[in-house]
Image (tube, rainbow over the protein chains, first blue to last red):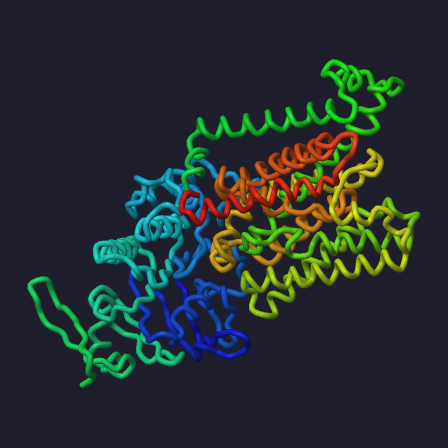
Length: 255
Length: 337
């Protein structure tokens, strides 16, 4: 399990997130919520060791991340990033990059790696275009290829930074279903989302960041009742029971 | 990217590689046979196999055309692979050894060693490598300290390139005998090259290209972006440093015997990207072969177009490369690329 203990992290000596304590338990979907600039992506990068913590420590199964080699980190946590360069390569080759942490010199992928990559593509629905150039795919198809690469990394923790941005509603739901399925397999899934309602409906735990500080970390119901979302996002929040379960929605004015 | 699709099928790939190898071999054969004196294929083969340097054909092949052919092959492959590595590592399709000032810094190092220690010219490949390395370090350092945007990098390279060009001119003005053929050096060319002069550069270029091919998977991962590459377990800083060292080694070695040859490092990797995609192993191999073929053909044209007069190969490269590059750009803008 990945744990953050009093973590402060940022850029150029200026902390963006301060003194955060947070666990990402196995088998649960944790959603990070917060307005733009509240430090969600910074926190994820700190948890992945991409940004060294200025203070505090990031623990992987109790070991400080500073003691781990990049390859060890990559075998423990995968990252579906928000922004990226898309090279002009075959989709299957792209997904195979997820096996890089397991490859030794001369870096030739084994039959098993291909099988894992194809299984990951199957899981994300991207197998039909395994031979296509990634650049020729639509935004949603590309996202499913990147998600397959993340899954091919086969890690106990999976971070997804705004995985539903720019996707149509069908694909958003598919991403959320994939996240739930991964959690049911025992993985810790961490999502950065902007959709408060989707987060409350789909998460096991919700962490709310406000101006770089963790203002709440609890179950969706407890977070809803705490009123922290209303304060943080300056919106009204409502919930209603429907035949499909509890649904949350927000209103423009905070109550 | 329609052109990529052609090479994405196994059959298309096979045809592409066979065609590229055949083109390169044909260019080699023509390069040995054609010139101010035309030699038949039989004469060329006989001269090569017998090692005869007594006959006119033997002397032409062994002392003139074979060294030039080797120089063209080495220079083309080294600059194209160097450009491919620089473009991949810096995530910048506008970067190349010529554009970001690597060639100029290598050239300045060669000019300095010729001016200060003319007897140590055998060390010029090493000096060129160190100069190229300094050039890479300077440009990357400037770009990173100002935010490392793609355009900043190119502009910093242009500024450094011009500055170093002025330094080369200053050296040659103060010590005129340092580079007797300064114009040839500035434009780039292979006239008067010998096997002895090529040997140390070849000793750097061939292992350099092999090392780039061995690091192709690392480049693939690096091309995803540095943070994503790191999250996949790549040690980004050391790998990037080693790759830039290799790019400097290749460009420096080429400049040490060919001068400031332009365009190859920019257009060959671009053309290969269109043909084989961006997977690093085929891209590096295609760049090496394509660069060798392109420069050999241009050198052949330089020697034969106005025979018995000869153009510096750099002029032909610019005449052939400029319009070709523009065509590539316009084709892309037109949505046909």
